[in-house]
Each structure stands twice: as C-alpha cells, then as structure tokens.
Amino acid sequence: MLKITKITDYGFVLLAHIATHHDVEVHTAKDLAQSTALALPTVSKVLKILTKGGVLVSQQGSRGGYALSRAATEITAREIIEVMEGPVAITDCCSEEGCPRECKVSASWQRVNNAVFDELDGLTLAEMAKG
Image (cartoon, rainbow, N blue to C red; front, side):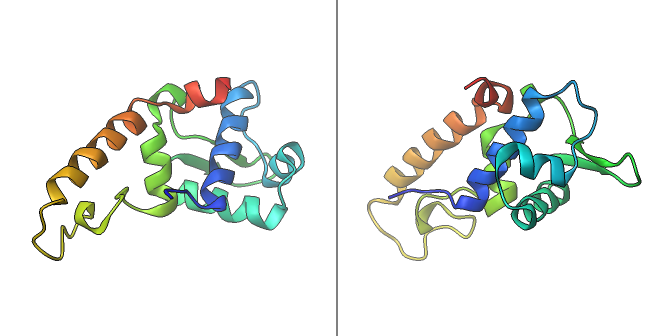
C-alpha cells in the first residue's frame, strides 16, 4: 500500500488551513495547533520542516508567525510531499539512484511513477484547500 506518513498528512492540514485563512498575515504555531486540533510540538515540527523546504516563510518577533512562501496556486502536492518525505518513488526502480538490478518491470514502474508525478504536479494547495 502506498501511504504518506501522518506527519506529511499534518503538513497538508496545516497548509490548507493557512491557505484558506489568507486574511491573516501570519499564523502562530499555537494558533494553528488550536485551529487544527493538532498537538503544539507536532505543529512546530511540521512548520519547521515546511519552512526549511521553502513552502513557508517565518517571521520572528512579537508579531511573528508563518505564511505561505508564495500563492497556494503555485504550491503543488508533489512539492509538499517531497519537502516532507523526500523524492517520490513508488519502488526502488523509480528512486534517484535507479534500479539496483536489471529487471523487466523497471520501465513499467517508471511509467506508473511518472503518472503519479503528473497527478501530484497538477494538484495545487489551493485546490486541496477547497475540500
């Protein structure tokens, strides 16, 4: 079964909340934890990963917090997953290192992986936040 981790799922939840509440300039970790019913340490961890990956920007100070680094229409599901988990590859044959052995199914898995890429690249945070 292909499955993203809970921490990545939480990343999508937080980003969708930020995207749909664009009337607020910056969101604090505490406010996001309360709004999404996620534990504050988990929210802080996810926000740090998303900031380091360039999906969010952080503002320090008493009026600080987090905001999207660019419009939600420009952030793709693939980018979010790759920031949270690393490169998308459904099998070892599809990883950046390539297939560790010569096999007959590698090209087929590459086709499937490319189809997944296309779908993830075509799905924006703005679309996901709509519900």
